Image 1 (cartoon, rainbow, N blue to C red):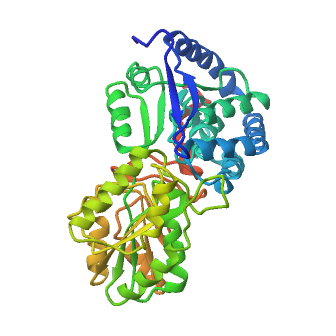
Image 2 (cartoon, rainbow, N blue to C red):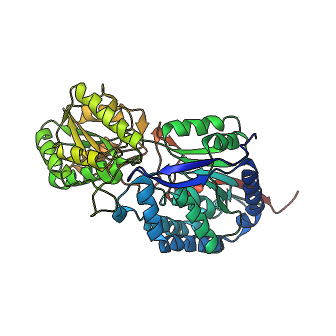
Image 3 (tube, helix red, strand yellow):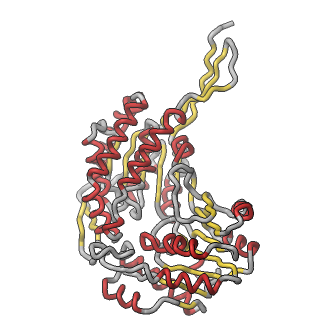
Length: 469
């Protein structure tokens, strides 16, 4: 596979203060080959292990991660900049395991097909085999539920590559799995550079690759797997729209849209990035949104509970500022006082204060490209038809939301929206009971719930003939 050999290191620059938080070594070719050998050796016994026993280990894993919540939260805060008081993702990770345990016996059970006295037909969901799971940095603990817990519940084994921004999360997770009796080789973490990861995928070493990350990263994974017939699951970016109809309850709606826009500093694939508001209520909406945005304080992640900290790196902050300035030069208007921007610049290069832009339109890059930052972009629309047209005028299709008191009309409009998940009177929420994934450039496949667990398996058909002749 022409993997790298020799010692190579990488460093994590903390967005909190620009310091080097940690330095780690990339796995060399020998370490990678050894991990593959351990995974292949572990697969038969893990796949044969009774489901109840696999579930017991994974439920203990979730609880063990919760027991390590304090160091994990500190890692999240230092590595990506989220305020410490918001940085514990272990309850969600453990909940994913519990919900999978609830549905796995039925989801992974044999599915009967028409049979008679001599022939019994059924399909059995079976483990695909060896999975490579590649994780993004923005929810670095919670996403283990989709990338590790779910494939393991289905009987697969996992080699896990975390983002080079959050490598310590992967190390601690592997340690926690071993601590609860997880068998050797079933779940292993490796620090891989992009080139080695792509070579591994291109070699056909894996039965499946699960990727959460950027569109460009997803394209590289998809290209690397070309011709290998490896199953590829991609959960990519979004440019998620929301539409506020004239009859919406603004008092209830605006705080939720603000949270959907600014939480995690806007660094979520399902963050609200495009806001369309009926012209009849546009000015009232904007006035109230500005007032709500003022509540979203920025500060040091270890300070007095700011609402947001820095974005993940200074270069990301530069991109957010550049796209905002481009929009302003093209006619958009910034509405937030300059105090927040001045405070952000005093905190460091990676800090971006929440902003509200009006007068935006689809000729502006900020309304086309995923921003991943705390900027609310508001566009006035003439009504339902224009709003739906603009919502669908995007290369992305992850999630979308509509706000209205008319539930029947709202659901009918959601039917017209091109997205993998649609919400009525809610936004920015990856529901653990429902399938999660996108269309267009937002990805391939689904995680969560029965659909996600089923996608971690292959349907094996059984034709059992009891009478010969």
